[in-house]
Image 1 (spheres, one colour):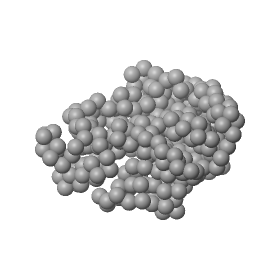
Image 2: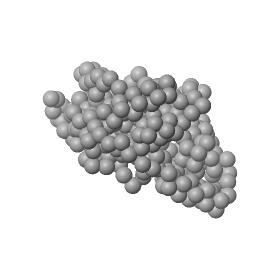
Image 3: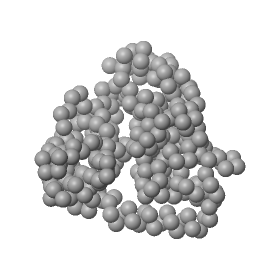
Image 4: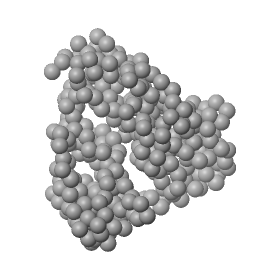
Length: 301
């Protein structure tokens, strides 16, 4: 294993070895990272990526740790966490600038306090701005990319600014997956602050009533098939409450798997297999995973 002192020749930020990753994920599941690094700025992030590529070390960028399942063996390589250096918000006229490490809840609160609308429906999404844009997270008819005008990324070891059209946003997808998102600018319409606060409160209450927010989970496990909903299909197959090891299909929302009893990543994978096999056999629909698998060499699901 390469020493911290050697990496510090090119990297200014914090470095830790064998960092347990479960604490950084909303699932509370996962092994350790060989290297866990926190860049101090964009140039520092570029430097650690260049170093990783030169040394042939794989790297992974972690935001709030939602929408992912990390293997029990952890991540062999470098995990880059952007929350410390890219946790800022700025406001200039109608443009809101958000660092990639800002949590969506904080971003929504900031926009509402400044009197801008268009993002209040995202308030309950457990993600950072960067992670939400990469997967174009959405809720209640809105998506993270709706009001984006520019995204700053690291692409091919270089800092670049991309216009919205260059990001190719789609349903829970974008072409930002091959980049490292550092910052985004949003142009938002003006709104009534009191009405926006009321709307946000209503939507968060609705989310809390319909989703298992009180138990560790990674969000919706499967994408919604065309003209259907994964939760309805899973529920119709009688799978709510199904348990494998410490993982369980939520009794509140069938498209959530919860870590109710110290679940392992393998427990979740086996439960995913049961769900997909059952839904496929009974409906003919092959559910596609929305949760990303990290650190797995090969997984047949």
